[in-house]
Length: 287
Image (cartoon, rainbow, N blue to C red; front, side):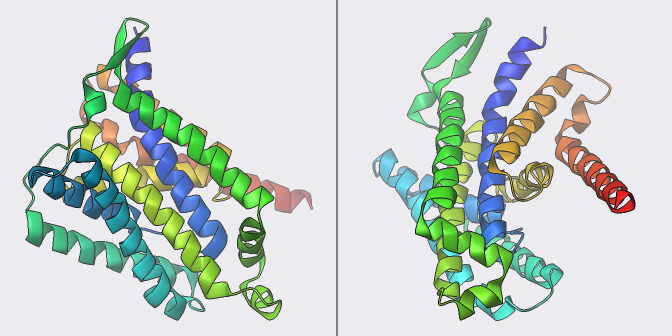
């Protein structure tokens, strides 16, 4: 009975996984928890919708989404984030929240709050999995989640850039003294996050709906997944994103709580924080 919902939830869970990975990569390199991730993706998705509705080829619209999201993330990471680099982590996170509100206001002014949907050619093809029709869009999302997690893991573990990012995560000041171009490396991390946000924005605009506020709140399940991954493990973050998506889908068959299933990421995040805090406290007491 649950199999159809599990299969369906894997698609949206893959988007949560991709988003969480984008947050973790940025956090590991810069120490910033990016609350603007969803808004950046929303901006890209609306640009894609505009390009396609103007009569241009759909692939051009998708590329526009990624390009605009990347440009927005780059602009903040290059010109705003460095000025907050030595402030408290809460202040840096609040800075991204302010950026998200600016983008949300611009989206509302430019496109309004009328819900739309971004269609993809992969919507018309599907696979039958356990008597459930799984669209190729959801299969694509799952495939992208796997490929991007593997690619970023290799980037961090096997390349000089990854070594520099890990160095920044350990000690930003010391990394600068060792000759690492701190701002440049951090900007690359913001660019990677922007590319990820653009992809997730297009996918979520297709699977759920194209609405500024809805896509901006994409950051909530992404943060929940990132917290479960302790803001460090890409693999655990990706798995957590998939699990959150599946739980959210499965709850839709429980009438008493179906209307509140979108609160799943909040509940998961709270439980994760409570468990991690308790574990950390026990370890400190054992020492």
